[in-house]
Length: 309
Image (cartoon, rainbow, N blue to C red):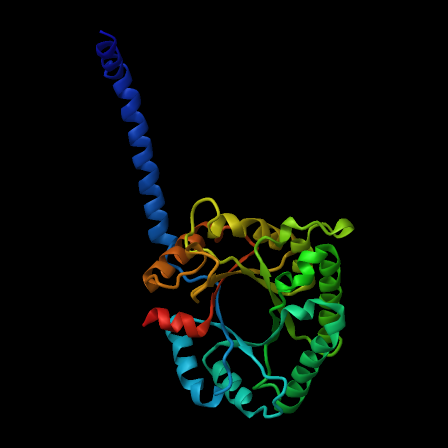
C-alpha cells in the first residue's frame, strides 16, 4: 500500500504541469545558450600566444615556426633568447619576418633563481642583452616587449621560508621593471601561477594583485584541460582576471600541451587538438565578458605542434 501511494503521488495530475514547466524552461535556456554559442562562441580571442624555448637552430627552424604560427592564428610569440650569444642576426631575421606577418615578438628569459636577491645580476644581464639588441638592430627588428618566467616557488628556499622568498621575488620584479622602463617603452610581461592571489603580502594586499600592478600584462599558468567545473580553467582563472580588471591590466590564460607528472588534468598532452580547441572556446565564451581577460597562450610551440600532428 505504501509503495502504491508513493507512485500515485508522483504522477498526480497537479504535479505534471509543474514538471512540464521546468522542462520547458530548461529547454529554453539550452536554446539560448546554443544561439549565443553560435553567435559569439567561434570568435577569435583577442590574443593567441605561444612560448618558443628551443632557439638553438632558430635560423633553420624559422620558416616552420612562423608557418605554424600563421596556421594557428598566433599573434604573440615569447621567443627565448640566449644571453651568451652575441650573434643577433637569427633574432633579427625572425622578428622582422614575424612583424611582416602581423605577429608581435617578446624576448623571453627567466629562471626560478631570478626570484632571489643574490641572483639579481642575472636579471640585469638579461635586460642589458635586450638593450644592446634593440640599439643595434633598429626599429623593424625590435622586440615588442620583454617576457619573464620566474618561478621561485620551485626552489627549496620556498619551502624553508616562503615569506622571505616572496619578498625577494617582489624586489627583483621591481628592479626588472625599473631597469627596463628607465631606458625604453618596452612592454614587460610575466608568467604567474593562477593561485598567486592566495598569498598575503601584508600592506601590499595579495601577491597576485601586486604582481599584476607591476607588469604591463601577465600570462596566467592556468594549466587545466577542462573549462567548466571545480578546479577547471574558468574557476581557477577568475580571481586573477578580476584583479586584472581592477588594475586595468590584461590577463592571458596559459594552457599546457606538454607531458607532465603533475596529473592528467593539467595538460592536453595525449588528447586531440580538437579537445584543446573545444575547451579554449568554452573558456572564451565565459571569460570574454571580463575586461581583464585577454586571450590564451599555449605552452609550448614544440608540444603544441606535436599535438596537431
